[in-house]
Every structure is written in structure tokens, then in C-alpha cells.
Length: 332
Image 1 (tube, rainbow, N blue to C red):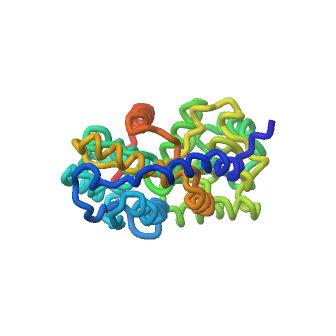
Image 2: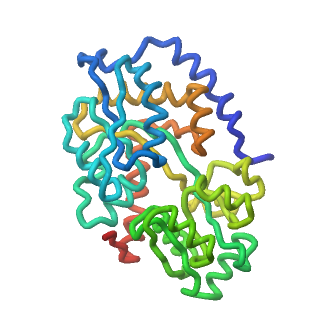
């Protein structure tokens, strides 16, 4: 059976749902007895990044479904904590939402001394907006042609190899720590200020491997400047059909995709959360949205209910929280 990820398959599965959604009565916050004033999507990162991009892709389609304008507002700082804390204190009326991510709602609360919010207690989850595959890459000079050889190399040379991330408490760091813990191997973490510096270090062999978001690495993988060993994705990528997923390799715990989601302040009425959830799901199933996500290296979000989304976050907070404590990771 061919396990490669094929975007058209996602399109085929969702066309029927999109057609049914289009035939349904228009959703709208004013249907819950609220005025049709603008909904603000607070992006806790600067413009131009992946989270900002997803927010802007969704803003216009969401506005049409909700029957009111949707604006994107960037409130960056502290790796996503400033904007997230701002939304946690906003009025719980459905008009101020945060575009969440694993950085703001997983890594920061675990690694920062005081992020200013609790990702579970202070927010009401709405829905995932997109998922991003993660990839394990090595410098091509490393004598490891596949994942098994790479793990054997780490065991043979404990602490000798360097791995990098975009920051001390970044998700790239946590993914690598999870990998090391699964095989009881050691390697030295080298943090950089952002993805650009991290990529430069990898290409120059200053560091030997990284485990992070797939899209930024792809051009250099295709050019032979980096070697991909395994992919955290629902299936193989058509861009790298020879690279297996961690599930295929027998390590499903490592097969964790990054996500971008949407959350409201805690105590937002359930009826409003349900309206927003249905609106996101309707937009996510539209063929145009599936195409936009695909073009930007993202995948269709999982159809998790708000409760399921919260449960997934709680599970990951427990998993990575244990790693953070054992490794003594503390962001500056």
C-alpha cells in the first residue's frame, strides 16, 4: 500500500463536507445575541512568520462565515507570551482570540519562569487551524544514511554530536530532547537566535543535526545540502517520497506534528466556542483553504472538538514537562 501523503486525497475527503457546510445556515456571533463587531485574531509573533501566515489565510474566509469582519493583530514579544497573556485577560466574549501554537501554548509555559498564563486554565480551546510536519535532518558529512544508523552513531559517540534549535526553550529543542530520551542517547544542544542562524549552522556543519519544522529545510534537502532521515507526518511527503515517517520506523511517539490553533479567553460561553469551532471547521474544509495550506507547506487540521484539542494539549504538556524537568531546560 502506498503510504505517501497526497494532498488531493485530502481534497476528495473534504469536498462533500464543504458542500454540506455551504448549504447550512450562515454562522454568526450575532446569532448568539452579540453585535456583529470585528473579531480580532491576536498573533503573538511578528508579521511574516508561519503563525501569522496561517492567521491571515483564515481571516477573510472566517469573516464570510461569521458574518462580521476578522482582523489580525500582531502583539509579539517573549516568544509569544506577551500576546497570549494579553488574550488570557481579555473579555470572554468571542471577539478577542489568540492564534496559538506549540511555542506559545506548550514550550513557553514549560520553559519560561513566568509566561504570565496557563495554557489550559486561562484559555478555552476552539480548533486547530493547521498542522506542520517535522523532520529530522543531518549534515550530509555524517556517516548515517538512515535513522537506524543515526541512532547507532549517537550511541557510539555519546555527547560528541551537536544539535541545534532556534532557542533554548524552543520546540525544536524539545523535539530533540524527546528523541534522545527515547533511545537514551546524548548530544549537545546549541541554541541560536531564530531559524535563519540555525540553518546556517547546520549547512556549515557547525552542528550535525536538527529536528524541527519541515518547510524551512526542504530546499536544502532537495539540493543535497542536508539529509532527511525521518518525518513526523501522517504519511510520506510527495516532496520526499523516500523518507519514512516515524510511525513506519516503529516510533509513533516521535511522530508529532506541530500545530497552529485558535483559543479564546477562559469562561467564554460554550455557545460562542461552538459557533467559532463550527466556523473554523467549515473554512478548513473548503477546497480553496486546503489548497492554500498545501501551497504553504501546511496540512489540513485534525477535526478535534474543543475538548479533544484541550486533551491533546494536556497530554503533550505532561510529556514535555517531564522532559523539561529532567533536562533542566529554562529559557532566558
